[in-house]
Image 1 (cartoon, rainbow, N blue to C red):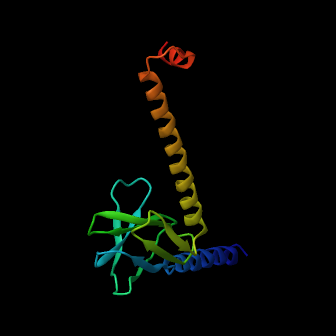
Image 2 (cartoon, rainbow, N blue to C red):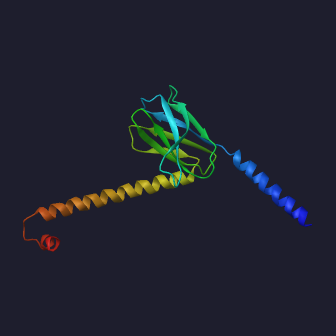
Image 3 (cartoon, rainbow, N blue to C red):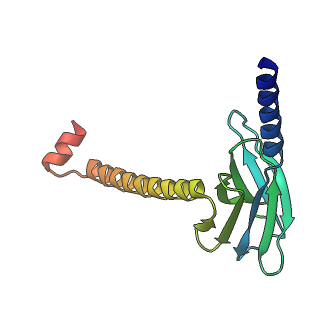
Length: 159
């Protein structure tokens, strides 16, 4: 009985490992207003300071591209253009296939097939808005501090 249980456990582990090894992550999409000829899929792993280029593709005349990799785990990937040295999008491999549409004249991109990427994109957008509000308040505070009037707010700030 113990041998059967051990055999079943080993079989389950072997099947799991085999299925994990065959999982591909495909990133396809279109990029508009790009002068670059080549696009890269770059992995940023936790604990590593160096990004790893895992795939590259030519950008076709219609702006379409296709990138793929076999990830070891769920990771954050960047889509990178060497010409112009810029990251144009980020994606998380929580799905097997992701479609990304990028317009370089805009500061945003659209993504389909990755709820985690959509959540990250929303978080980053909201964080950018909060930073913009904080910077605006900082600028207003700096202007108040430069004022020489007798306003009680200026007195409280300079005290």
